[in-house]
Length: 326
Ligand SMILES: Nc1ncnc2c1ncn2[C@@H]1O[C@H](COP(=O)(O)OP(=O)(O)OP(=O)(O)O)[C@@H](O)[C@H]1O
Ligand SMILES: [Mg+2]
Ligand SMILES: [Zn+2]
Image 1 (cartoon, protein in one colour):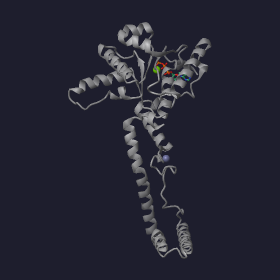
Image 2 (cartoon, rainbow, N blue to C red):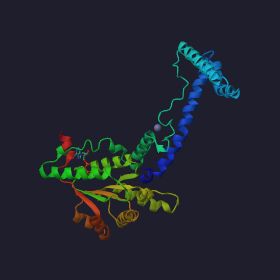
Image 3 (tube, helix red, strand yellow):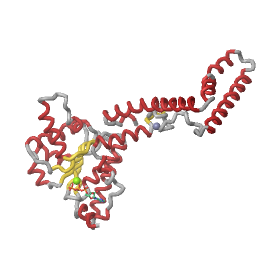
Image 4 (cartoon, rainbow, N blue to C red):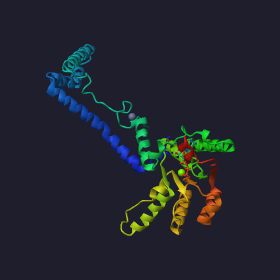
């Protein structure tokens, strides 16, 4: 399980650091609450000090030899239970819950360490997914666009069969995603037919499975390439584009809405080619048809897109405007 997962490295570092701190913080907070009790509730401090001696007392009891050891341990246990009872009583009278100074971990399963034995705990996986939604760029879209709220009711007749085919393929793709095995995907079709909807839905599932996904529009992606080219001269460290090459799945939305230039075309070629060499899939969605794609992009791009991308063609009537009429 662990080997095939490749969380966004930066997120992983950040979340790991958070989880290293979390249990320490929980314990420090518990200590602070204990301090408050010592100050406000007379008698608690003495009891706590006695209780904290338990380990030493057990040790001393053992040192006296095996004879009567069981009895000595039983006596200690009894003493301990009495101390705890008295402490609980004092707290109750002062209006505190009995467990006021217990350590309160957010996750009782892993004690906020993020690991349950050698396995990553669900709570850390969740934190990584949340960070992944943010870093992928789908956080805003994800709330409205999922497989669950994708409805076939917006398509009629043949379009509906087609949409069902696309839906099943995208869902399958997302659920079985493995970077080295997954296809490149081209989502084609007119405006408002669900291309962005299904690609964000897929992105969420793939992030939930622990993969590093980057989603953005072609416009934004190319503008990062342009900014980087410009800034390079001043700041060698500036790195705006490596995530487009490194992520497990790159989703380029709205290809064709950018102002096409030889620079954007060569950036696109660079992205597709490098990712293919690294065996990392790319998903592209576009309003353009094949003729238009050929016209706008170089042959070496379109021959790749048409030859090596699994193509899904959306059909139907603009759902965006249908929804507005509802
Ligand atoms: N099958 C569907 N069920 C429910 N909502 C849908 C469906 N298809 C699209 N929508 C909604 O309609 C709106 C437009 O869809 P979407 O943004 O996915 O279209 P698109 O194909 O990406 O269009 P464009 O080419 O203009 O980017 C969105 O709000 C989306 O959530
Ligand atoms: Mg779209
Ligand atoms: Zn946990």
